[in-house]
Length: 171
Image (cartoon, rainbow, N blue to C red; front, top):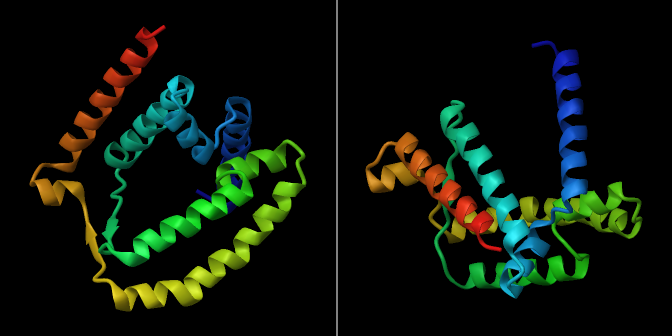
């Protein structure tokens, strides 16, 4: 595929995805907050649909995602606290921030521009430190359970479909 065609497909996908995100009002951090508050029907439905689409895309589309285990301990707790504070101050995750920018809220443009130096700091200073502090190992769930990855994907998609059915059944 030529660069021009790839650019056109990416543009069409980006506009479509942006329209979907804006109309659905998706923000993962706000969605998790809704789940914790017990108002989870709509966001859980969206999460399960996204999970099903990505699972089918990754496992049956020929992609092989690689997870990383970086150990556990103090740095995980510290980074979770910092991440939570950052999301609370920003008012949402990156997806919610992009949605807010698209809706014309210029405060979120400042939030978005602050992500760039923050990510640069993580890549430049935090990642090298963690590579020395943790034993990083690439893993796949199928390798751990000794089950083919396609079978795991099928089980998870079926489980998600059952959950979607149960969510839709509740009134």
